[in-house]
Length: 301
Image (tube, rainbow, N blue to C red; front, side, top):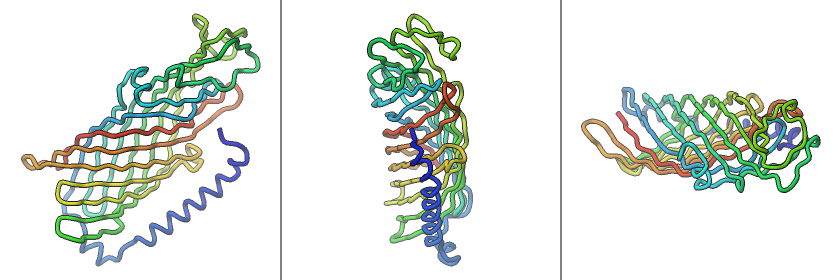
């Protein structure tokens, strides 16, 4: 959770990050002649990708004022989840230096008692023994945004490197359910808890918010059909979440097939967010880092 001192420092850190990013973007802006010389071919190009995200999770979730620390590797997640990996889809359309994109993530993740620990028992409750927890976390993430190529370098025919700025919005829809396995003595129903067979169940309800997102993407084509990119972005800034960041690196190898380019992608993605609302027993939130390998298949036309 964020301390009072860290909270007071956040506005200053956000201003510094925004100034630094603006300076980078300004320095990369090309002249009109250079942009025209290295522009993409005319006409719209589309790229659609379906991919799996083999997710590991660390951080904490809060429901009914109770915080549960999470530290689960991918194999722990799949053994307790209704989905083996997150279901994801990505679509990008571009014409010349301008592009738009959309990204969808849906996953229902489960965490075992060894991976989810109950941090702060309620003062009204008496907990006997070690209070282990079993938690589940369902998330839907939808991101849409625009891209603009700031600069392109063409060292040789069939190869290029480009830097793009991106601006978008990321919508989060989350719910947390956590069970505490312990002997509890209190009127749990009056406090919003559910109790069944000795388990107290805390539910966060639906947590949803929208983060503004700004970032950069570096693309490199080694040769036709061999591409890699690195992307970094930050968001939230207290307008949605307190702060969010993302980093992605991926490599794609593609084959031409009847006018289409079919590709296989391998990469790694890390996505972090921190969001809390309410107070006391009504406190709900997430402070999580989601990370893991990406495996995907794409078609470009």
